[in-house]
Structures are given as structure tokens and as C-alpha cells.
Amino acid sequence: MISLADIRCATAPVRPRQPRVAPHLPRVQPLTVPPALEPPWHVILLDDDFHSVEYVVEMLHAIFGHSAALGNRMAEEVDNKGRVIVATVHKELAELRQQQIEEYGPDPQETSPQGQVSMKALIECSE
Image (cartoon, rainbow, N blue to C red; front, side):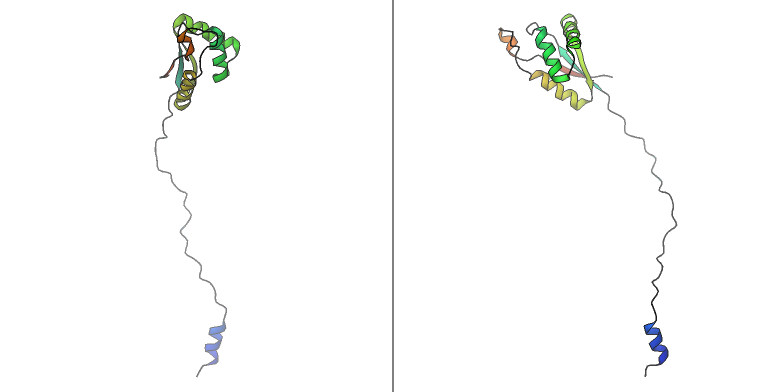
């Protein structure tokens, strides 16, 4: 037979058990050396005798956004020294800018076959 005490125990409110939680400890990050930053790369325009100053200035403006004054100074330097640094950027962008220079197209003022191709560029690590 069921006693009255059994019924009270069965109908008494059930208290949820408190979960056991570990004490809060701050997370400790492992001591590691941060990754080294990649050095910047130079985009270097190479000289040739088949492209006009106007072509160089226009190309530098179209690809890099250089002003006409800066483009003229760079065109003069590439003509005098055989090369000029036109940008210093991260490696992927340097590769893209090199490709853009080499695919820019012919100089419309040049009639020789050598002027009907784009100028050449290379990239070098700045360090």
C-alpha cells in the first residue's frame, strides 16, 4: 500500500542540481613569436629606346596613379639610369603591377616593331 509520505515525496517540487563548474581562470596564450612581416618589394621599370616619354607618363598614371610631374621625373630617371623604382609594395601587388606594365600595350606614337610591345619591368625584394 502507498503511504501518504510516498505521495508527498513524489509530488514535491524537484530542485535541479547545480552544475559543477570549474573556477574561472584566465586563458593563458602559449608564448609564440609573432610571424615576421614580409619585406616590401620594388617594382622596377626598365629602359628601352622605343617608348616615348608621353607613353611612360600615361602608363605610370594609369597603373599607379602617379601625377604627370612624378611620371616625367621617373621617365627621365629611367632614360638616364636604365631603371627606376616606380612602386614599393607587398609581393603580390608587385607581381600584379609588373604584369600590368608588361601588358599595357604598344606606344601609339612609335612606328617601329619594338615600340609595338609593352615596356619591361621586374620586381626585387627591398631588403
